[in-house]
Amino acid sequence: MSDRSSGRVADWFSKRRRERLERLIREHAGLVTETVSSLLELLDAWREGDLDSVVKAFNRASAAEREADELRRRIVSTLMGGVLEPEERSSLLRTVREADWIADWAHEACRIAAVLMRHEVPDSVKAHCRAMAEVALQAASRVRSALEAVFESPRYVVEVSDEVERLEEEVDRLYEEARRDFITASSELPPGVAIMVAFLLDAVENVADRCEDTCDRLREVAVRTS
Image (cartoon, rainbow, N blue to C red; front, side):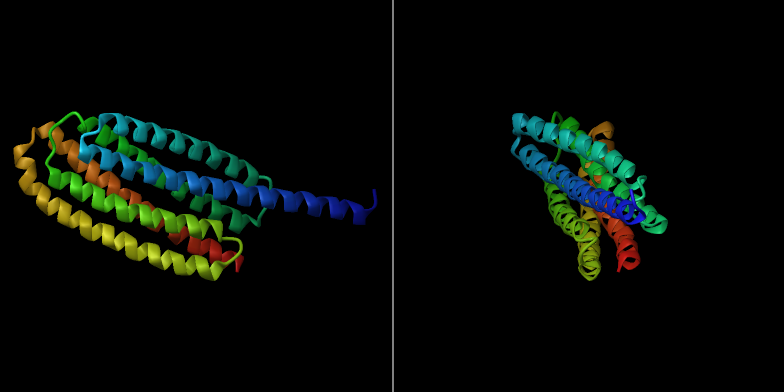
């Protein structure tokens, strides 16, 4: 085979790996968002006292989080094939790991809420959790848009990242409201339940935090690939 032919074959394989990487990142972003969406569905079912729907939403969140974790490993394997330059590869690896943490925290929030389902928790607490999760889902959806565009439109990625930062600040504001109200509500709860509620609020807040962290990494990738 001539050097020119060898070069064409190498270019073809490189293009195929790049396309595979982009597809995996899109799929991973979709599963991350699905996990957060399932959290919101679970919290709605919790507020309504619908145990069956809580279980179904929890199972969906668990499946999506598990698939996202598997896809992350496949993305790492693909990146190790030398699809990108070393610095770009390193930045993207960190970005995908941060995105995976979004799903991890959403799943953790689902687990805590599923446990609390069997205990009396004030409606105000449930409402605060739901409000935070709704904005966190908006942030996760915007992260998905940014991840899908990371190779094609760096400027768009930066714009979306700024939106996510504002959404994360809104979750922080809701979190502070929830904590203030919880100080009063917690006095009426058994200590163990109060601790679990505090963990739940932290977990939902961490979903939004990880969205912002992912976008911080995405900005790095956008700069390196622009």
